[in-house]
Amino acid sequence: MRVLVVEDERKTASFVRKALQSEGFAVDLCANGEDALATATTVVFDALVLDIMLPGRDGLSVLRQLRAAGNAIPVLLLSARGEVDERVQGLNLGADDYLPKPFALAELVARVRALVRRGGETKPPVLRVADLALDTVTRQARRGERLFDLTAREFRLLEFLMRSPSRICSRLAIIEKVWDYDFDPGTNLVDVYVMRLREKIDADFPVKLLHTVRGVGYVIREPA
Ligand code: CA
Image (cartoon, rainbow, N blue to C red):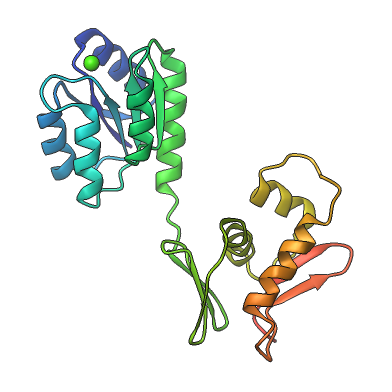
């Protein structure tokens, strides 16, 4: 696992490097934005730790350039106290996480590890079950020639079901993964959304893909 750390404060850079190295990461250091951009575009890293305030080209500019060039490297922004606007701007530009200074090294290492883990998940961009396809980049669903527009929640629900075709997903698992609740709201929320999804992807087709398993949950599967 290789991490690029971009930080002009030498002491901080050296602490961060040591902390990451002791956790098994290979670490490269850059002290300004121009070097960072050049290094990040020529070498493949698993994560980028990017300070916002840098001499010359700042961290946000580096991030903007990388994303504009289609570079999807996971980015953890470091921001000084009070740089709230920059933080928000950074997240809008496609940073994955940020850490305000001063930070504990243990926290930085934990955040970097989480980023690397997320970045390392190779998820296929298009999920398929029978003639139903879900493009996780454009967030469009298609069945045969028909395109469906999905709301954000419908998309998450369909994605969750399609990531494990033929596996029965309980209502509680759906609530946890699609709504991020760690409790059962005790409503028919899931059933209502499944019904809406069915209206779109199944109603007009003779072969149904989304099935109810009574008393348990839902499953999406290829027809036998
Ligand atoms: Ca700095």
